Image 1: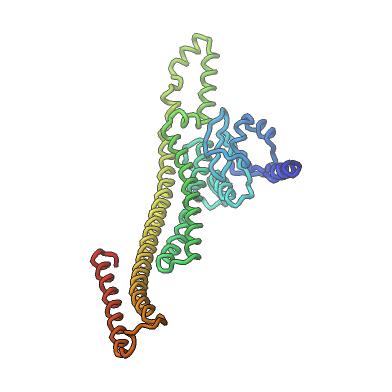
Image 2: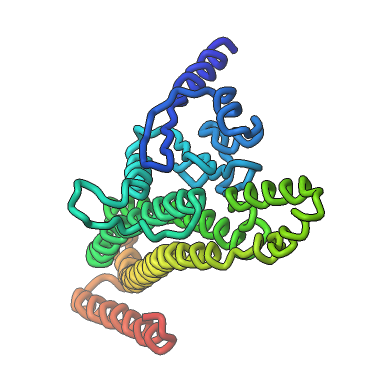
Length: 362
């Protein structure tokens, strides 16, 4: 019991509390935050933080929680607000490219005075949607890279297995098939989450944190208008309608682009899976063929044993040391017995082989 408690404490200590915060100006800073500091910083509850707990196997998901977006996509665990992005484990090799892309995305439009405009300067998406785009791009690119790496290793291994079937190649393909199955499950989880977002406009609308804040501010302003003069002037300005606030066509197109990318990765894995299954079928056909050849050899050996047993039976009869009167003065019969027995044995073997070939047994 004590060892279990010590091990659980070690696991809790081993979990990194480091987060990196990237703001709208591309400035990143590494923070040491526990869950209470995070709850105060981004105004979310402890239940939502459990989604990002690496010790809990929580499924992939993207959730809008009031003033923040909580996303758990494989190794990327992120909290997005209107002003900053918080990423867990910034020193992780798989998270570093996401941090660098976030900083590059929001760097100044003109850098080093060379007059070259940044490629994202004209992006009309709000800050939180741009951050979500970087996260989706990072996870889709990471999964696609793993799929390509698996393809480069799997196809030569499968070809080598076809040419030379041995324990080493079989074990190598078995490990690659296990890796492919795990990667395929991960790709399906991310794909299903993106597809669910596309199919629900209400969920997509809740991801616009800035829009929700603007709508709440305008509604509060309208409630404060009491003067008839101000009301007559304000009547010329229309309040945002539900259709405007729920306009998610641009976000839907963005998600569809990444859905197509993850579908491409899924198709690569499906093609690899079919190739593995075809290789397994080919290996099974080879094994069946070898098994049939062994059965044919066993049939020939068994037929030969039957024929030799006839010869052995005749030799045993004439080899018994029992005095018989007909054995005297008949030495010339020895060669005839040997020849006749050999002929009968050979004829029996040929009849068995002919019967087997007629029945398709060999």
